[in-house]
Amino acid sequence: MPTLQNSVDSNNATTAIGGAVPGANDTVLFNQYTQDFYNGLDLSTNGADLYEFLPGCKSSFGYRRDTGQFTGYLMLKTSAAGIVRWNWGGDWAYFSGASAATVIYQVEIGPSGPGKVVMGAMDNERTWMSRGKLTVNATCDMNKLTVGGGVADVNESGSYTLTDCEACGAGLVNLLRGATNLRASGGGTVRAMLPGATHTNGYLHGGTIVVGCLSLTNLYSYGGTLDLTQAVAPLTFTATGFYAPTRVLLSRRGVGVPNWGTSEQRFAPEVQYVD
Image 1 (cartoon, rainbow, N blue to C red):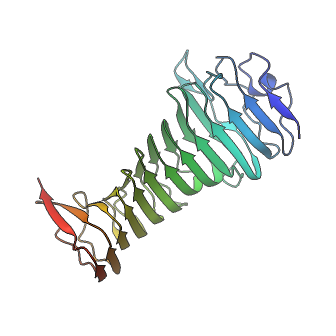
Image 2: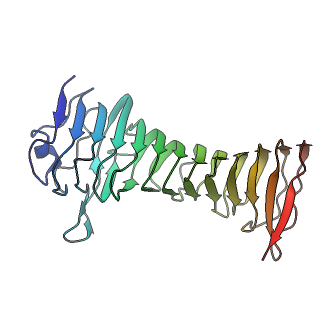
Image 3: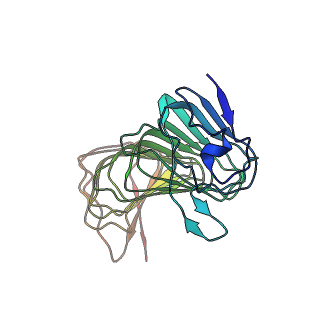
């Protein structure tokens, strides 16, 4: 299908790609200029296969750097397996669908510049992040999040929970909503910090899970750290497994050692108290 690109230097996103919204299964490239986009932001009529924001594009989307103002979301829509890829060199990217039911299937975030991405209302199956700063707003229905670098803040939502929330490498997730699975591997950290939230499974593969939530039902550790210094109540697990050395951090002024439930302990957890 056709490939569109921002061939016109304009603050109007529709004008920049030729004056018409993308068609179904199109590819749309933003690969040049520094003009911030704050007009003509609704490109969501049809589902494109790919939106790619490349390093040559230094623009902000939905934000005016000259006034320091948010101006609205760049509204997109993808095909059933479409991708939105943020590798651009700009400062801010506010984007969403027309509503929380609008499909933006896969999002990939790895800015070449100082990029900060804000995701608004959309139906998002998976987001991958390798660097930068991400904010997931309450209206974003995200299913799976993997952060391998940078910081992702997932805001509280009364409507949506995650299936998988994973941090690996240098990634950090600050999670303020429920999730079925919390995964921390290779140095990554997941901070589950909504006091009333419940999570089903925690998986440690060399990372850290910080528990500041109401409950975590099961824990399976293949090495890493379970940080309970921020826990809001004593934890009682249904099932746990410790298959490699695991640190459990407790505050001297906080909750006590958890009830591990039905527990397989090839390596007994190492409890450490911190001030």
